Length: 122
Image (tube, rainbow, N blue to C red; front, side):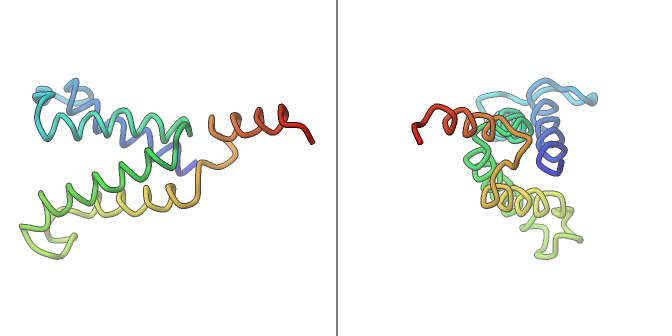
């Protein structure tokens, strides 16, 4: 459940950057650093939520959040509570956990593994 909820929330950050939805902010330029972040958030969040290529997507998303923290929040101070960087830190470590732990039983990755086991000779 954690993977699904966090993946969908992360994807919404990307859709907000790329499409301006949800919210009332205009979309960012796709050929910019924020556009790249939006692509990673939208695509990576959906991959994580559905559990497809989960470890890779979560690792990339974790790195993206680490970069976001150090570029946008850390220059305003070292303490996440004071520099509004708590969400970036939480996302970073949740995605790192998912990358290490894997997608779990409710995932496309698990379905693919089951199909492979059924086809392989015993």
